[in-house]
Image 1 (cartoon, rainbow, N blue to C red):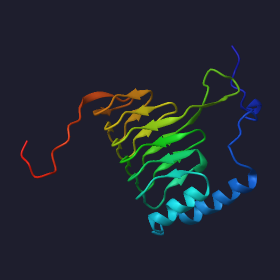
Image 2 (cartoon, rainbow, N blue to C red; image 1 turned 180 degrees about the horizontal axis):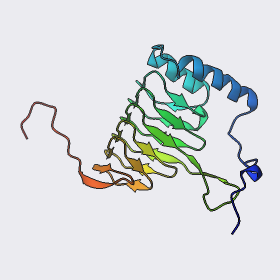
Image 3 (cartoon, rainbow, N blue to C red; image 1 turned 90 degrees about the vertical axis):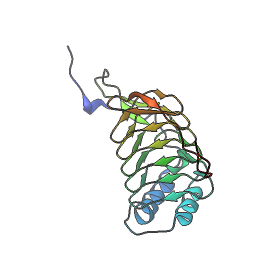
Length: 190
């Protein structure tokens, strides 16, 4: 039985989508305006993301201490909220539909390693979060995950795979907990 050979790791096939200069400029902009605790206005941050190739809808709210690996792989719908300390590791596509909330410390991962490969080969898969979904504090979406519209991934949970629409998912691994129902906000009684 052979052992792990990390010295033979090779991800030369992977291209991040932009050249070294753009990646270096993003690294600088990310540190100065996103990862910092300074309260730069969300419209300014949204404009910077667009300048680096992200698709960003209207009225995005982006809190301090947010890390985004490659904004050119990121798409945000209208009225997305990205909470403090969120980490979006966008080695591959990340798509957040409109009205998505990523709470404090949530993580989205699009890359991992092949545990069966002695060289620890890189594996990539996109992540999608449906309209009106909520990724609660410190929850994690793994590569290839799809959180359905209106679904909730509870605090500290880990999603691998698909979560159906309008349902709560929780645990490690996240499993179905119950259906999600919204209250009426128009003043009418239920």
